Length: 85
Image 1 (cartoon, rainbow, N blue to C red):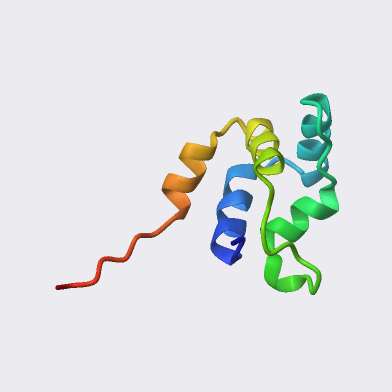
Image 2: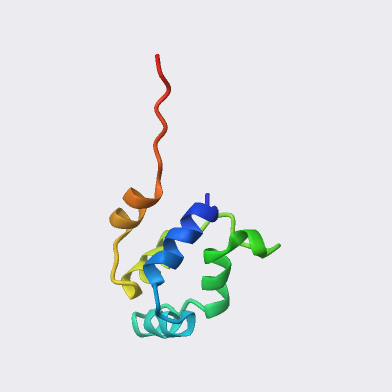
């Protein structure tokens, strides 16, 4: 499930790079992800038709364009809450 926390992490990874430049990089990697779609992922709460889920191939190519990996992205984005026994 794609949420605001994942969107914020994606935006942090993008840093000072423009959304359009990342879109161009995804095209060079073989699967263009539009700058509009990247915006929707970064700020899902702003878009009524925002994606609830993201396919593995899309997030994989997007993370490659950001010089990151799925493992790094998920390990820093996911918070595990332990429930006391």
